[in-house]
Image (cartoon, rainbow over all chains, first blue to last red; front, side, top):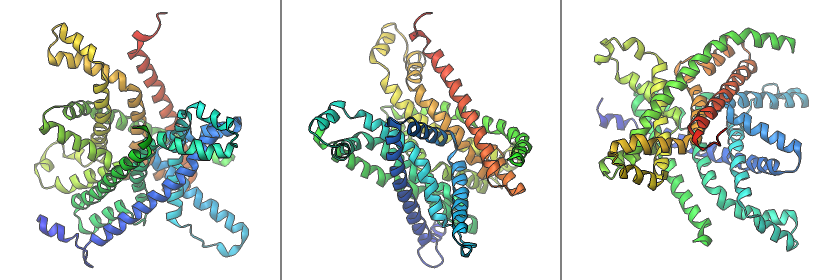
Length: 239
Length: 234
């Protein structure tokens, strides 16, 4: 098969795979963004726990980050995916018997699992960023009579962002790539899943996996440009 | 609880038998990948644009696409190309049908990209004075590289490479998706046969934690040995 007819397989018409790949791209971005938001929340909670004076909070956060970082992402994804679905079903079955055939939305379960994994790495990034804020700044806030919450909102969070951004950018790039793992869960319609479908149907494996890889590369390129712009903006006071 | 424990014990031998597969995948991918990282890093620092740009592009592609996509591309893509060529008739063919070698190939290329970038930074971080000192002693260019620049660069980036090796160990679980029965693949196989969802995954998770722990300890010994001249004499 020559190249021209290979590319005709990618057309946007009803016979082509072009539109399916665009849909896959959208799903991959949606899953990545949602999982990233979950990981930001978990990261903030985790970092606060690690820096708190409570031994229990520190212990739980340590177990969380150590476990997630020692286990393969694929294993965690499957474990959380299955257990999350079972847990929700169990809770629903306690409420009423009407939920017998309730199916957990695979999208939500996948997002929860990916967010949980990313949250552990985010915890470390945010912990490091909070520690890089000069102590004098926090003392100055205290001396000005700011409450703890105000200090967090006005002093710690805005400055932390500047230190955390390189790590957060890397984690965003990981999130987009890790989102490809959800294709093993079955009918997920994400970018890699589309590559899998298209190549299984047409038997042009090399071509369609390359298409999927190039689209992932496009996400990476655009993300890198945005991250660079954000970094320039956050560092504008330090030139 | 008792029943669960006996189930764990019953699947333990099968899972343990898969540990060497995971370790071999990790070892060979790390060995080949880290060796390939040296020319990648050197090329990316070369003044020659014909070396520098391809190397930078290679690093960019390896770091910019998911490892799973790379693995599928190599496994299915080469699986589509190779049959019908001379390779099918060669003595290598029985090996080339096995997902194991494709997995090592994919993980090595990926590692070469990631470590290549790390090594590039480390080579740039080697103090200038040390290279000047070697030059003053009349070391040739290649001798400077092998005796001064590379060993010092490895010493500088060793902690990062420890982290990368652990990531690689975890990434070998993706080989289960191209029919390699390492720890993860075996756990999923047990899942299908026994209809148990959690126990096989939890048991596999425990094995990964133990492997990561041992690997971390081993790398600490290597780090201490490489930095032994800095430690206070006992």
